[in-house]
Structure formats: structure tokens, C-alpha cells
Amino acid sequence: MKQLLNTNKMYPKKSLGQNFIFDKNFINKLGEYVNSDPNYSIIEIGPGKGALTDNLVKKEFKKIYLIEKDEILSNNLAEKYAHLKNVKVMNKDALLVDYSFFSKIKNVIIVGNLPFNVSTKMLFNWLEIKNWPPFYEKMILMFQKEVACRVIAKPNNGRYSRISVASQSRCSVKKLLDAPASIFYPQPKVDGVVLEFIPICDYKNVNFSNLQKILRLSFNHRRKKIKTTLKKHRKILKDLNLDDNLRPENLSVDEYCKIAKLI
Image (cartoon, rainbow, N blue to C red; front, side, top):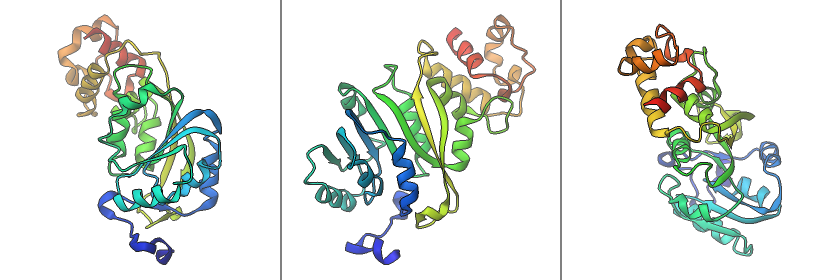
């Protein structure tokens, strides 16, 4: 396997968090969640050597955008798919891409095996989009298992956190697949999980920036009661009939959004 990956000096780069998926069964299962549709466009984040891309190009899509930060990988992908007019390779850092470009394109799905070291930051970039609903119809993203568990956690759970509320206030989130460490090369120390995000508009009118401020105040000291962490907003807590002896993990997404709306 190592010899195969090192063809043309293609060594996985630790600095970029590169872990290539080589398990074809997993790739096929993941590909099944991205339905073929000629009216849709795909944005694949970190396609690497094109394992998932090979699956996607067999389907019908209006356009497939491959965003790859590694210049050598990007050039290899451009050469590999040069014969396909609907595939566009972008040698860019996905964290720095101006996604407003894609707002002109309808029916967009984001898919990606996100580098674990920047996955949370990338997710928040897509959740913080001001014009909601966003340009994408769906996101299918892989995270480190610990992060994924926090994203989907519900209230009164020790894993329920800022990222849980932020994600669930913006999207309907569900788990699709486990991604054991054994399907990657090099093998990471942790397993991964693939999650699906579908934007919702339940809290469209809630200022997301205000919500994040409330979440930071609450969860930065998660063992303290909200009468302490949200002491600046005790009047709002009273107006909403919220027990200020509760801890941050006891409030629902809806309650956090109501607080943010009254700031």
C-alpha cells in the first residue's frame, strides 16, 4: 500500500492532515449517499488521489468541483480527469475559498473527507453564512469520531456543546457511516464518522453571531450554572421562564436560539 501511494513521490503529508482512504467497500457505501442527478453540482473537499471522485464521476452531475490544497495532488487530479468537461479542479485551501461564487449555482452538495485538524473550523465557515438558507442543499462530511459525537449530541448529554447547538440550529444532522481508522493510510489514531447536514430554516431569523456569543459564554465554563455563565442576560432568562440553576448542557437548541433572539 505504501509503495502504491508513493508513486510519483506521492507521500501523505502530515502537515496537511492527509489520510487517504483505500477501502473500496467504504467508498462505494459513501458514494451511495450521493445520488446521481444531472441537475446537481458537487463540491468535493480534499479529494486527494480521487478515491471518492472515481465513484462520483461515474454518475450524472452538472459539475464536480474538486478543491485540493496540495499542488501535486491537484495537478494529478487535473490530468486524471482532463477528459471530463464537467470536472473542475481548484488548487486552493478550502478554508480560504470564497464560497460566494457557488451562491450563483443551484443544487449544490458538499462532500468531503475533512482533515481532522481543521474540520471544526471548516464546518463553522459553512454554518456562519449570512444569507440563509445557504448555497448548498446538503453536506456529507467526515469528522473525527469525538467531534461527530459532539455535533449530533442532544441536551443533558456530556457531549452536548457549542458545536451541537450551532450545527443543529442551522441543519438537520444525522450519522451516515462509521469510518474506522483501518480504512485510511496512514492510519490515524482515531476513528471517523460521516455525517449528513441538511439546512433548516427554523431559526433563520436568529442572529447566528449572537447565538455563538451566548454559546461561548455558556460552554466555556460548562460545569457552572447559567446564572453565572449568562449573568449578563439574567433578565432574558427570567423573561423566558428559564431556571437559572440549570447548566449549559441542560438547555435545548430552541432555548438557546430564543435567548440569542432577545439580545
